[in-house]
Image (cartoon, rainbow, N blue to C red; front, side):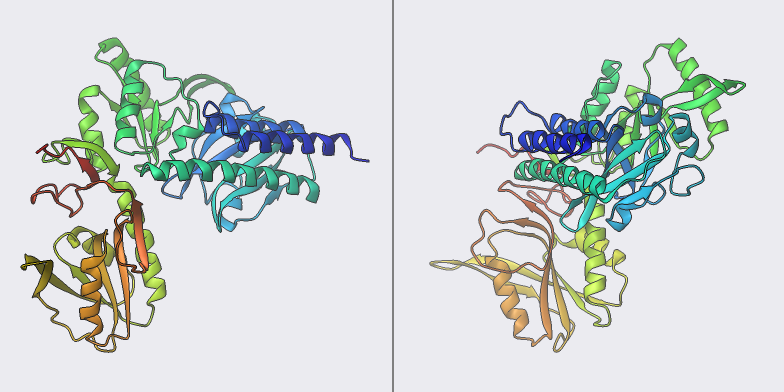
Amino acid sequence: MPSTREKACYKAVRRAVGVVASVDPDVSLKEKLDTIVRGTARSLAAGASLVLLDTTKKKLIHASSWALPQFYLRKGVLDADKSLSEVLIGQPIVIADVAGDGRIQYPEIAARAGIVSILGVPVMSGASPVGSIRVYAKQRYEFTNQDISFVTTMANLASVVLSQSRQHQDNETHTVPLRQARSVTFANPSEEELARILDFYNIEWVYEPRSFPLSWEGDKVTEMFTPDFYLPGLDLYIEVTTLKQSLVTKKNRKLRLLKQLYPEVKIMLLHKSEYALLLARYGCGPLAHTRARGISRVLYSSAQIEEKVQALAERISKDYTGRHPVMIGVQRGFICFMADLIRQITIPLDIDLITISYYNSSNHSSFKITKDLDLNIADRHVIVVEDIVDTGMTLISILNHLRSRKPASLAICTLLDKQAHRIADIPLDYVGFVIREEFVVGYGLDYKEEYRNLPFIGVPELEKS
């Protein structure tokens, strides 16, 4: 006969499955994840949390919790390589006694919260971890295989929820931001305004993730400071301030004290007038792209592009180890992409380029090669680098031209894959982003020779004819 705990686990799974399967548009991603975390905690009579990897894949950020004190949640953003290790290895981790265990990043705060044992189960997306569900017991607890199986089931349901949201967002050419998995209530309009600006530029942020003790009386903390934002991409804390001098003076004092006590922490006091300076650090905002007039929406920020280029370079370096490939750029749009890509590739390679021009004959359009290769690619492994592939018609002609040179192999690497108008069936070997049917500029892509120098990819406001 099932025990009380087993019955609670079954009930929690059923409830979570019902929420995950819900098509009610009023049920948010946050509510679905909260249901999973709450059911996990209640079933095991413990605290529980969901932490998700940020876009750098280096930080774990709190997304949902149950039965955990606020001071524990505000202990700080976790480093994936310092906090447990389930996200790194993709396997459940049990820590029977957190005291003295080197995998606990904030042991003193865990002890203060009364946490003794922890179970961490990774949330997977295919073969890649995207986060973890963690269970916290306030007494020494030997998590059983049945407990681990239950939490794994809940982690799998969380993965389904995140995947559903990601698929929906991908249709809108956006990734799933961590902010959708959280409920944020801002303390003042200035904070909300900055959050909207960061969202527009796809800059990841966390609201009030850590409280820093500043003064004590004995063992009792008498003063703390909680910065408004943390930006994982810059490893930077932000405190937003107004022009009211009394507040500025008070915050400056706290920042000076914080820097003395925590010299490793990067933090800045930000006035509204300085938003542009902050955005420029990401290659965004008016100071970073003065020619970006008429940009209706930023599709991919410079930070997102950098991450994607790094991932592509790692794959190419691994796939072509010992093969000394030739990378061939096509036209001018590839310049930004290829320049960043080759700097990240860790194996020997050669580069060349090919340029073309279009012309119209009496009954059709075609193209001619205006600058051919300088290198002999016979028996060489060739990678064609494109900024964007849409219909594929021009690319198929270029590939046929290159095949006539008898390369040993021929692969295609493109930053953007626009499939909506695809005519030629071309297998793409390395793809950065899949985008929908819309005109994009920036990062080498132009409109009437403008916008190539933007550090991001955006959607322009085109003139109406």
